[in-house]
Length: 214
Image (tube, rainbow, N blue to C red; front, side, top):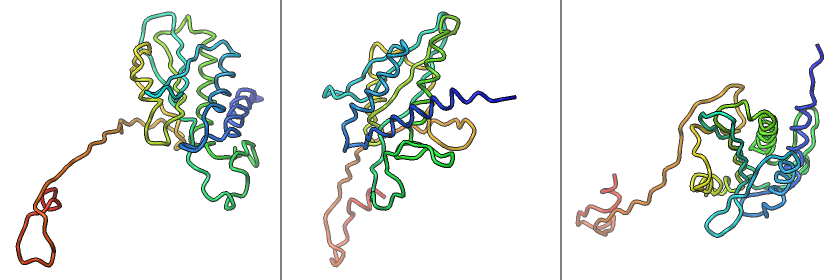
């Protein structure tokens, strides 16, 4: 039996286009990579819209596909910003190569997570064509503010009053060939601890802030 590699080739081609648009967090303008995604989705009739942060900066693209019958919504999430290139002289190929050599897709963001973004777009296109027979709905979040640590795309998605809150989120990180169930989440806090000031050479005993914190 001959395997149809057409869908796989299409996913890799889109991922290559994304890789060729540098989108390093805090360094590059993310408009080009979002434009590639927006054009691809629009050309296939997929409903998508940009999400913005409080300063009106675009931080994500959101695709929403409603099924024809009631049911839970599920979200697919992939980041399209990347880590920096680092020392480019240490690379054996351009960081924005976006090509396939010896069966490997090359370039910054190939694994984390432009390939997943391309795959999720194709899943959305496939389901959009038969959404009427499906229950619930699908959201695809393409986050351009993840590697900053600000999670601007996710924040904008969850704060959007028009977005349907999903029953669960599936993240397109590379890893084992199995689904990993987790609820790592994120919690940040600022803690202030007060204590008496002193010096390690002083004979006077004092309970300092470090001791109180311990």
